Length: 497
Image 1: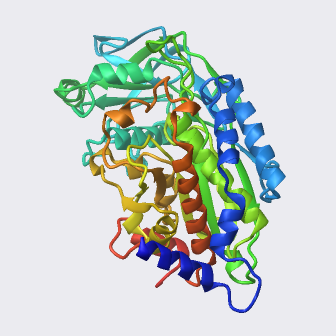
Image 2: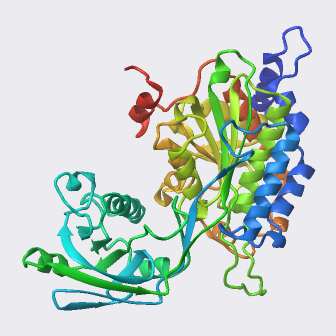
Image 3: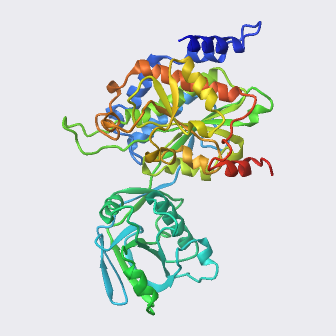
């Protein structure tokens, strides 16, 4: 208690040197209040929003509400954006209802033997080209125009399902860019059972796509090859052609969008640097009913609370600008594979090398109301500010206690970390992924009346206070030397070159 009181006194006196300027602590306490938090959470996670599924009419209502809040605080549109929005060209695709695939007298059955990852209904036939892994270097001397590309899934070094999926999308884009009429990957990874893959692909899915029609969409298959027999057969025989039919697959563009706003900094030099405050506002929509018959997955913890955390930061910083500029971003499509954040990272409106810190907020739940859990706390030089801000609010900041979950790579922060931007994620307090977390995580019972708003008030205040400390610090934050993204960050910002 004595340590906390001393820290409060130090923070309170730090900027108060014979003048009436409010301290960062006073500015935080002036704007963050429990009733406002509760009002926002109850609206965003209401049944009316029907789980805020990406591509739904309800998520567009949520987007308008959030943009209106940012505007009402005085945060400004970002030059180059469409008002307070960045349209994200999601293509919604329905799964194939029937199909066939064959080559060299071998016939394969849909779902049992192959899965349609992408494509459109139609019949396809063409010459075969085998390209090892189908990566960029494999195309250097290959003519694939008008042909079907065959390649192994992954890159030969990773068994991680998410990494294989990312590579698969890159391969699809490469095949299409080089004029191929289709891509077939031999899938032989034991990391994810074939049945689970089928469940993932045989449902409505989204992909980021700039096409306004399906003329240039080519078929993309995963061919089951757990014992590598299909690969061996192809590589040891002179196989010329393959044929494919797909039925029942449709494609359409959605109207989804990221939400953006900014507040210019007050320092003539530091305002050229942006601190980005981010969270995703989508959830998983309607699902299987629980024992009470509730089928609306409201997503209070994941991620209405994270969304309102960013709103609280925006309200505070718009009233009391920091030395650095602030960029507020609310993402769509996180639950579909971090799609909204990946799109902004690849199509930045504020250049990535002007964003010096990504302060992401995302949650699965909480089981300890004495702490905040920061995924990647010790990976950046901002860690002490975060610890001090939590201590000032009666909380303790701890690092990720569940490394086995891979949480750093499962939220929007990683889209920017991969670019080199320091990017921890601020989460509700948990010490393990236990039954209390799983009770609400992606469950229909995750309703606004199930959370502790006294705790949320402390949690939000610590986030805002830490934000102000980072935004006003003399030195900008960076990765701790030796971190996975340290060298990428140096290249992004031109440091030590």
